[in-house]
Length: 248
Length: 276
Image (tube, rainbow over all chains, first blue to last red):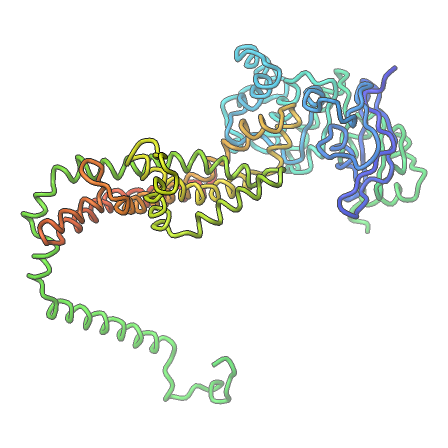
């Protein structure tokens, strides 16, 4: 069986700073994998290397068996099937929610205007913002914006979804709406790689949790193990800080 | 002043309080202003001034052609130059932030040269183009020459305006577009440039005002007849009647256009500040 994502000996430097120091890991189709770790541990960089928003300095990235790090691969074509959701939403501010979800369908998948609109409305309704089609991003709350961003990615019929701290920029009371949508996606069998600080979500939804620190994977296993009974001291220290911040 | 002397600690009765001091300074300012006004009113030769700068019958002679020819031509030169500078300014701005180093060099050299040269020098050089390139003629004749001059200069400034606008669009916008499978070029044209254009509307309006004023330099192309714009028109009539009124009238006509445009730019700027 081909892996949904396979990363081999991935290294990434920013200048002299080695952010990823040899990462090997896989995600199987239909799996939800959460990446946790302190800030600066390289987890966002790892995620961004999967769709080559960051060019890996060394190593290979395969998505559904195709090597994206191969210079001959059409990266634009490959990215069509890899949805990505950003911490800062990155909606296009000069377009309505509906246009945000339609534009790439029309320009990249060459869908007709009509078809794109049907798909867009479907997906906006699915994430619970079906009544916000004509609103501009500035008129939406953070939670609504992030759900529009998820709809925008889903409208491309992605084979897998990357989430880069999707709830970190949200007010606490809006986090739940976004997590509910992500949970629903997971139940539908979407392959998901999620960089997150939401331990509850990781524990309940993830099939696997990956703990990263200092540019390496320290621990990788089911949430009951990595979060419930971590083997490494670094994991324990991190979890203690995240779960009980007031006890420092 | 900043080093405190012992006497400052205990202000004696002889010292002025800050408020009193301020009142005296303001009074002095009003006195100076009143004196200057009185001097102007009594010592200026008003009848001679009016005779030279605001003679109604001379102003009247300017009238139909002032709008029919001069203002029309000023607008043609300005809008033509503006169109050139908008299109080539955008191209140059994209070259300036290009990954391809020679493009960056070319753009930088062009921008530095044409922002550094006085507009007048550029116009003078255009008049010598036919001499330098025998048989060469600027397409569009006199209009073409004027528009070319304004376009050459405007492009350099507009390129810098666009560059600032393009760089003001957050990087996440490009990343989002690329992650949806758009090519780099598609992302620029669908996502980045439309936002950049919106951002640069206020400074671009100011650019238009600057070009409108620079269009007066068409005077140095030696235009005549139906090609004259406001400044040349005013100057010609002024020589003809040995009276400065037509220049005054031309000046007022510029203001009729530039002041509203200036207000428009300020308003657009404020609207942008209020958030999109």
